[in-house]
Image (cartoon, rainbow, N blue to C red):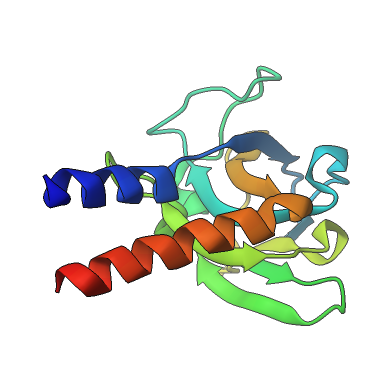
Length: 165
């Protein structure tokens, strides 16, 4: 009986409440791409992200082709907070690739999207982008005002696990 309660608490903890699809169009001969202004992600805390390439998704919601795996595999993510401090620096984009039952979770990142970028590694010699395409992400988040209740749930879940062990 207690095991099922732990599983229920864990599922509650991992529940995704809100998400936003983010698209960054690529341009030829550019190696740094800024995230667009994301009105829906203001006053939020990012709890997870996924990144996709053309082997997972063919087109974005705006019907643009998704970045090809070759460009995706040489790309890195840089995330900065509102104080313009880089929190995540050059994490390989492929580390955000989702697999069934796996999602890259963050510890409630407060991000300034205007200072967040995708950088494409520049091979020697430079390789032109194959076709017009877009980076495609799903960003999972909570509203800042919900953080206190979520932290309380996490503390309850941890206390329950500690009691069981």
